[in-house]
Image (cartoon, rainbow, N blue to C red):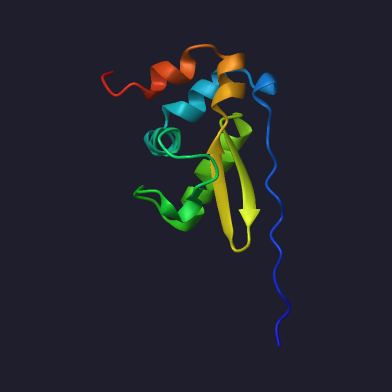
Length: 108
């Protein structure tokens, strides 16, 4: 019988601790922008990591979420075997007013 594996809880950076260049770099990648846009249209804590329509494998997806957490854009928590996500919109907007709204526009 194998012992259950426990994942380490993800580390989160608060947007107040994020330089603007870090935020911009996180949002400049097309995959990360897709993740943020999909999260913006989903209820909080409703999207598991594997539910996003992006053309990358599991390891690359994990990396992209790490970058988004480090930029203060995403918060994650484990719910059983799933890791679910929420966009830290209010916190990020307080730090960088209007930036997320601009980035989420689809007419740009």
